[in-house]
Every structure is written in structure tokens, then in C-alpha cells.
Amino acid sequence: MELALNAQVNCTDCPMGQVTRLIINPVSQKITHIVATEKGDKGEEYLIPADLITDCNEKEVQLSLTEIEFFLQKPFIEYELVPLEEDDSVGTSGIVAWPYATSPDHRAGYEPVEQIPHGELAVKRGYEVKATDGRVGTVSGFIINPDSDAITHLVVHEKHLSWKEVLHSKKYDAVPVSEIDRVDADNNTVYLKLDKKAVKGLTAVSAS
Image 1 (cartoon, rainbow, N blue to C red):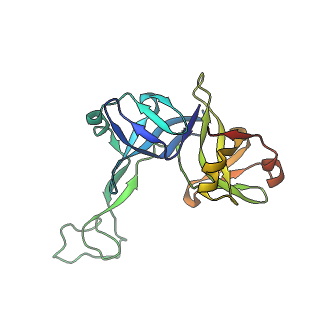
Image 2: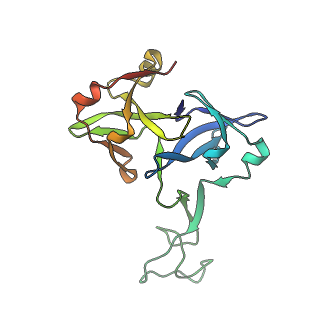
Image 3: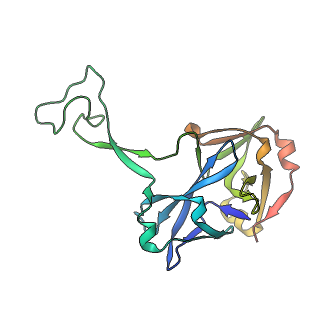
């Protein structure tokens, strides 16, 4: 079964939004959460435990939640007060004083912080995938063993294809997770143990 980034998320009583990120435990190679964005231009993101997924494919993810229960899930983005450096100061007109204030204008405020569980990784569509000798494409989703819920393959579309061409061809490279060297979340990049020639030799999978 394939769990794709940007797949439509459905609650039991209505369509809800889209999958924007997958949260992965790098030790067990399992997806622990998805990040789902409610529909609309300014939709909020929510952290949804994977055990609330009842079915999924490359187009849709079905949750066991109602719409009301969806909005009771933990927000993926929470806001924290920003600390100043010790030699910074806040004027008496500020709402709060050291050690909390916004950056860079030093007025009281907050910054968004992603709520990624400790020790886990967040991967989103568009992460670059690099072989040992250069870039090979971008992340599209994951293939999951339905018996164990373990991730078996990373689904990648090649760099020379536009997204429309990828959808038209419905073919993707399936990279075994054992060939992933590391994920650099700071640079939005997945590094492989393979070179480009080896990636090209992988079996393509169909999205249909």
C-alpha cells in the first residue's frame, strides 16, 4: 500500500484536507504520524497518529475520526515566545521583559515551532533525493507493508520530469529504505547509499 504526500484526507463524515508531511521513526522505519492540513487556503496543520488511519492509497487517506474529532488533535505548529540574547533589552512599553521578546524588533511575540516527536523525522513532498554522486529527484511518498506497517520503499519522481509528466506517466522509482543513508531535515534532503546508475536500475512502480 502506498501513502502519498498531498493525498486527500477524509474523516468519517467529510473530506478534510491533504497530507503535507509524514513523521517517521528512523529506528522502526514506521510512520508514527501524518500531518494533515484542513481544506482551505489558510488551513491549519494537525498531527494525526498513524493508528487513526483505517485505509490509504496514493490518492486518499481515510481516518477513523469525525470532523469534530479531527480538530481536537494536536496542532502541528505551536507558537513559543522568542528569547533574547542576554545583552538585549526591551523597552518599558513592551508587554514582557527578558528573556522573552520577538525577533528582530524585540517586541513581545511568538514564533512558530513544528511539533515533531523527539527522535523522529518529518518528511514532506518535494524533499530532494540525492545519490552519492548527485541529485536524482524528489520525494513523492512511501510504500508500506500492510502486514507490519513498516516502510519498505521511498517513492521518488525523477528530476527531469515535471509534476504533470509524472502524473501522466504514473511511474515512480521505488527506493528500498535500506538504501537510505540519512535524512537531513534542515536542508530538506534525503541522502542515498546508491549512485545514480544504481537508482536508474531500480524497478519503477505504478501509481495507478
